[in-house]
Image 1 (tube, helix red, strand yellow):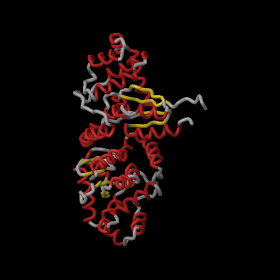
Image 2 (cartoon, chains in turn orange, brown):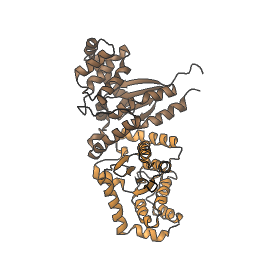
Image 3 (tube, chains in turn yellow, brown):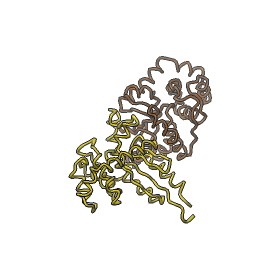
Image 4 (cartoon, chains in turn orange, red):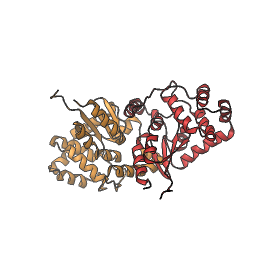
Length: 203
Length: 203
């Protein structure tokens, strides 16, 4: 089966989620190792929480206390930086709309990685128009044109549609991965995703 | 440092929790690999939920739908059986009190492993006095004497004290592991616990 299609991993991400940032530092090693394709899918975690009745772990005091320690342990385990953003929880709407707007330039994947790094390593506020405009420019896109598209109805609608799609497919948190119908929730499910991709890999 | 004390892993378990069962099938390989001591600590997850405001993942419909698939994926990944109990959620009070009562016979660790296996592999109802009495007998204890102790005030008090201790130390779910002050929550944190034990291992 020389022309078998490689499996596709859809990675639903919201840069406001620290576990999504952690996952973003690992997922490419997994798709490379298994010959899978990676599709970065922006979605609004706040919308998912609202629709499903789920809530951020920080809304429970005991979980909030544990969260920082847990995130530091993961960053240490992965060997990646993690610095608490100057504004948390951040508003990720602008960043997510920019990701959608960059899809037609095929710069959405590069932007996804960059915006999570800017938020969780450089600790910058991703609700800042200056921060996002700067990032878009660094990727080689026409920043003024992209930032105009960011505020357009089609881009706003597309982000809503992606969020609704994820909810309909079963998502209730972030990060959420899909391989076809199979869902994996959380940075901590990457080993299970990895094992699944190995299992279904075309021989 | 030939007489350095090995690190102690305290494993707070409630047999009603499927993720605790999964963890119970893996934790000994981790403590063996790192020369750590394992202490099985019974606690009542329902009491932890009540005190912290946390709740079972099955209380959210979208999470409940995902839960079965996720548990099956973990069981597959670990290569262990997982069969849904005839009664779920089960009442684990009797099983936990039996574990406490068996501490003075030093059979609590063997009982912990056995009761989780009976619940999540044999799928039996662990609220059944016949099931628990049978298990206690199989471990070589005087079943009648132990089952009498199970209903005694000191045993009930001790289980409450263990639960309160876990809450005070930061627990909000199960399984919860402690290495000194350091807490690890969840079956999915076993890799982080393992890495921590390797790091602190006496040379």
